[in-house]
Length: 497
Image 1 (tube, rainbow, N blue to C red):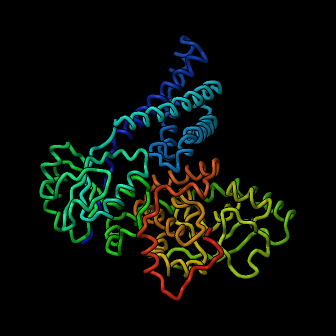
Image 2: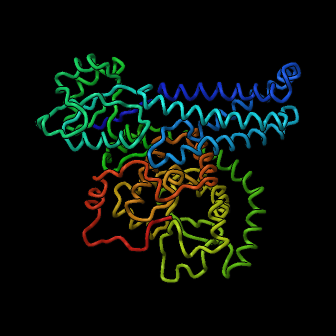
Image 3: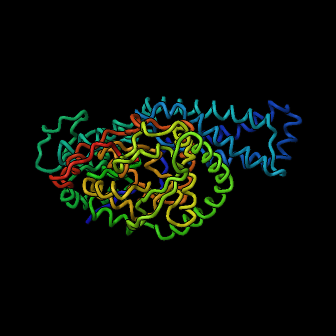
C-alpha cells in the first residue's frame, strides 16, 4: 500500500502575510494614485463614480500576482528571478488592467491614475517581499519540525532538500531515529533527540507542528499506528515526495513507483478537467489565430527572404496515448539542419537562423501550433511533445517517461517555464519530474498560472544553466542506469528541445 502525503489547500502564515499585504498595497496604491492626481475633494468624487473600475483593477492584480508566482518561495538559483519578479508580474498586471478597462467605456481609469498606481504597486510589492525575507531570516513564519528517519542517507537527502530553498519555512528542531541503525551513525547538522518510542513526548516538548518522514516503505507501515493520532492532533506529515512538491513543484523519480502513480490516478479529477481544458483550448486557439495569422504571414515573408527552404516546418511528434501526429512550426533552422538524421536541439543551437533566433525568443515560431490545438491534437498546457526517435530512447533510459503521454501535449507546460531546455538524458529526466507534478496537480487555475508565467518567461527569459532549483537526487542517476539496458548508450548530440 502506498500513502500519498498531501498538504491540501492550507495556507501558510508566510503566504497569508504576502497575500494580505499585496491586497492592502494594491488598494492603497489605487487610493493614493487618485488623491495624488486629483486631490482629496475631486478624488473622493472620482472614487464614487469609478469604484467598479478600481475594484476590478484590484481583482486583476491579485489574480495575476497569484498566477505569476509571487507567492512561491525563492530558491538560491532563482534569486535573480525573484528580484525581477515584482517588476515583470506588475507590468503584466498593469497591461492586462489597462487592456480590459480601456476597452470598456463604462469602466475606465485615467491614464495618470493607472500609471501612478502601477509604480506604487511595483515599489511596495518589491519592498514587501524584501521585508518578508528579512522576517524569515529572523525566524518568523518558520514551522518547527522534526525529522523521523531510519537511515543516515535518507536524513541527509531530506535536509539537503530543505537547505536548497532559502525560504523553506521549516526549522528542523532535531532528528528522531527508528530502526536498527544506531544514532551515532547520523552525521547530520541537527541533534538526535530520541527514538520513535519518544515521538509523542518530543512533539509536546519542542512544540513541533510538522513531522518530516524519511523512512523505508516497510518502516512506514510499522509507524502508522503512531502517526495517525498525530495527524488528528493537527501535526503535519510530509514525506520526501510531498516536500519536493511543496518546495520545488516537481515529483522526484527516484522516490516513486507504479503503485504511487496508480494511487495518484485514482485520486485525480482528470476527466472533468479535460472537458474544461478542451473548451478553453478551442476558445483561445480561435481568439489567438485572429492576431496570429497576420504575424505568421509576416514571419513567413521574413523567413523566405533570409533563408532558403519552406516557411512551415512539419514534424512528427508523439501525442496522447503514444499516437503520432504532425506538428506545425515556423521554420527557425537552416533547411539542411538534419541532413544526417534527427539531432536534439540545444539552448544555443548554431543551426538557428538569424530571424529564427528572434522567432524563438518571442515564441512566434509556435503560433502555427494553434491549428494543432484547434484540431484537438494538442492542448494549450501540457507536457511538450517529443519526436518518436527521441521518445523511444528516452523511455528506455528514464523510468516512467511514458507517463507524460497519458495527457495531451501542450504548447507550453510546467516543465517549460521551470526547465526550458534539456541537453542530456539527466536533464530530460528532470523535466519529466516537472511534467509529473503537472499531471498530478492538473487544474484550471494551474493552467492559467502556467500561461501567465509563459508570458513572464518570454519577457525575462530563463537561463538553462540557472534553472536547477534543487540539487538533483543522487539516486536518480542510479535509477536511470538500472532502467537502461547495458548495451545501450545515449547519443552524443545533446538533449531534446
